[in-house]
Image 1 (cartoon, rainbow, N blue to C red):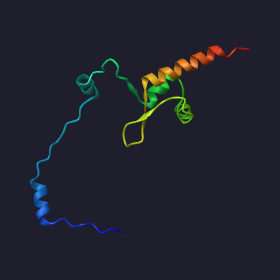
Image 2 (cartoon, helix red, strand yellow; image 1 turned 90 degrees about the vertical axis):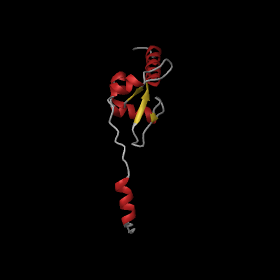
Image 3 (cartoon, helix red, strand yellow; image 1 turned 90 degrees about the horizontal axis):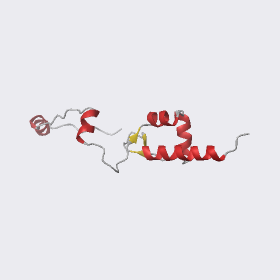
Image 4 (cartoon, rainbow, N blue to C red; image 1 turned 180 degrees about the horizontal axis):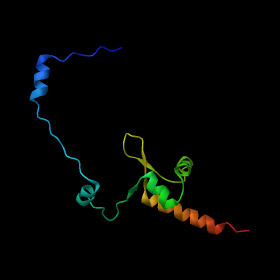
Length: 105
């Protein structure tokens, strides 16, 4: 096991005299108001939103992702995947085209 370093009195004084900036959390509405979506920007969707648009389950979305049938991005270190709205819409169009090409028996 690694040995923890002890904090010296000088360092403790330095820490107690340091000015700490406390930031307030912004609501989603505040962030959107400050950074409106510009033309050409692409909306980012969560997995739940993508599933709702596509009318599929999260497991099906994972399968599509694994087969590289739908694009996704990882923004944070939390390993959470997000989907660009244009990728979801492109998948819908491809699925619609395939449905038209398959003859119904």
